[in-house]
Image (cartoon, rainbow, N blue to C red; front, side, top):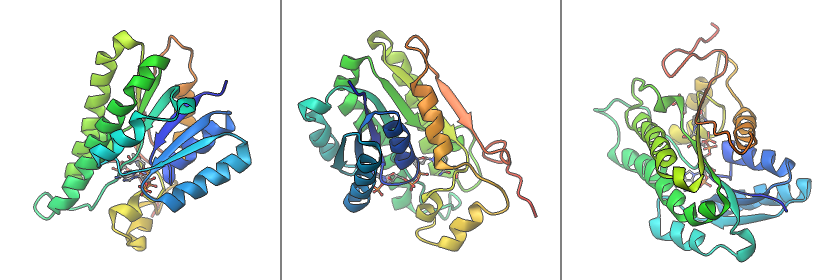
Amino acid sequence: MSKIILITGASSGFGKAIAEKFAAGGWNLILTARRKEKLAEVATAIEKKYGVKTLSLVFDVQDKEAVFAQLNDLPAAWQAVDILVNNAGLALGRDSFLDANIEDWETMIDTNVKGLLYTSKAALPYLIRQQGHIINIGSTAGKEVYKDGNVYCASKHAVDAISKAQRIDLLPYKIKVSVIHPGAVETDFSLVRFKGDASKAAAVYAGYEPLKAEDVADTAWYVANVPKHVCINDVVMTCVAQANSMHLHKDA
Ligand code: NDP
Ligand code: 8X3
């Protein structure tokens, strides 16, 4: 019987790449995001290419009621969730503590931290039954704070801490908890961060070869497919040009 992976933020970037990777491995997919049309495009293309089943759920992870309403009563055929990937997230702005916009701070905390908590809690009954696996998407920003990264970095430090807490508290249930912390990866991330400013977004990835969403998906696949008695706790991955949040070498 095919396994089931639930991926938040599957309409683009890492979420979409992880969906494709697992579909290629024969997994059925529960795909979630806010943009219904984008999500439908991803689901339709994957079903056609890989012949797996998908269930698309459209909700905002910030909306506690919606998260529980959508996940509490999954159709019977979709309840055997083996893996939850908490990937939905974003950065908004890159401004000093003085200049940063408070609504941006709130959205990052509500999405990256509270959304991850709601989704984890809602999916937990299924994961407990399956002795499943939570894979959280952190960031190098969750390992070191960088200038003007303030609340985005804080939200990803929270993901790091929550992952450690989940790993401890879920030990009796034999649930694995892994966290993948990528450095710079070229996706829509910077376009979202800079609110549609394509030249600012492109500048982030100029002068070096950043990671690709597929690199993160390959890592998620590896982490998910180690033997049953093994749990990869923490993966920090960067492109060769990057050492950590603060040190990135760009060619002139
Ligand atoms: P993208 O912008 O390409 O994808 C973000 C995904 O999250 C989209 O599918 C988006 O879907 C979804 N999403 C955002 N907000 C919400 C919300 N409130 N409710 C539900 N879904 C939401 O960026 P990435 O793929 O790069 O980012 C994925 C994760 O990886 C994020 O957590 C990000 O912080 C993290 N990350 C990114 C890095 C990078 O350099 N790109 C590096 C390290 C970590 P929709 O808009 O349709 O809701
Ligand atoms: C995304 C990577 O360096 O922009 O989490 O914070 S970075």
